[in-house]
Length: 286
Image (cartoon, helix red, strand yellow):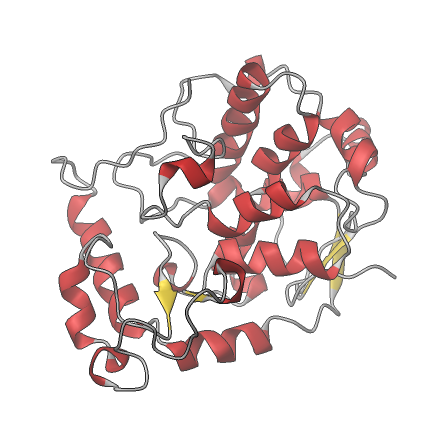
């Protein structure tokens, strides 16, 4: 079974950086901020690239919100997908979901907007209602404008009882962005995959709602070169075209893969039914 629990209290060199990230997140993630970000990142009209090219962009990205994972995100994606393949060998859609669940972290790169870590990574939480004390580093919410706003600081806030989790506005980050991308591109992945992508960082959500464990959060020590995941098959099964982003093309990391491997990777992208080409304001089919 994959290990998905984060230990926020463990002593480590990263602890202070992690807490500072959550302090900034809890102060700046407001209902109005998320509304603005969702609007700004929903045009779906920029550069195209394959899913593997997008994965390669994460070679230099480290998630500062994780207290015990300081490896490049591409390694995390491959390890997660391999761990899921081992645990759920017959669920190929879940293998793909694990591979792409964190691709939204490209928002950290200058070519994709260069958003600060607090606006891209970290545990997510509902906005538009009172902050839940169970959210990690809850004490920092006291400095959030919504905390003292009567429109947002009651139990229900702007919502009606029984409205459904899908209608709750979550803090902005890579989860919500990737969810919007997949949804906009009419993905053929099942609704369970979209749920995992959108809520895999919503750690206070009862475990039962996330399949008792988060299949997209693996810290197992599989070496990337040992991964047996058939990425090419997965992508050719679910993604018919390409993903699109608001990317300016300036990164040089894309040149790191041999042409033959890159060609196979581009063919692998047929997985989701989303495009195989990405754009930083989202992805859309031609």
